[in-house]
Image (cartoon, rainbow, N blue to C red; front, side):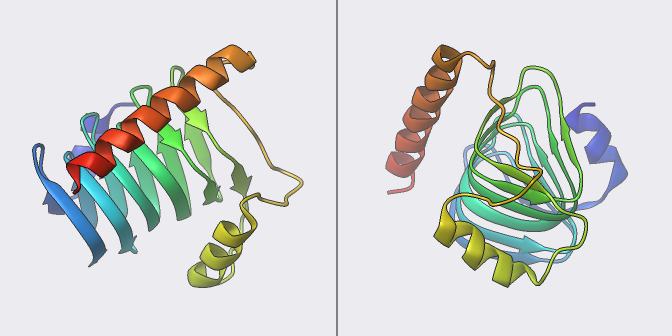
Length: 168
């Protein structure tokens, strides 16, 4: 799967372009593509696509979320989350379906849940506990080796610092 497949499927009605920084809340209907730097919250009943050059420190509420770049935050999807091979996810995911391509860096927790209560309610519980309590909780990384997991965390911390500096 590649991000070009997702470009063709839906009309992109909002975009944060490469070289652009946006900070705040983004509420929309339809598809949002992030190719620049974003920090804040995204809410849509449509799709969110983070391109391979996109970097986001945010919480995303959407139907389908496709990650080809870097996300540091939480994702709450009502349909599915797709982590492309170029993607890096540091944070938690709550979704009924999860697709992870080979090569993804993922440091966080994932809960696969078919029927979700109200999204806002999930967000509060999700963020306050810091850990997901679920029978289907999964933890993955670049490898099961702790050295690779530590390297992924260090890389994520470095990217987060760069994002926060660029958003100031």
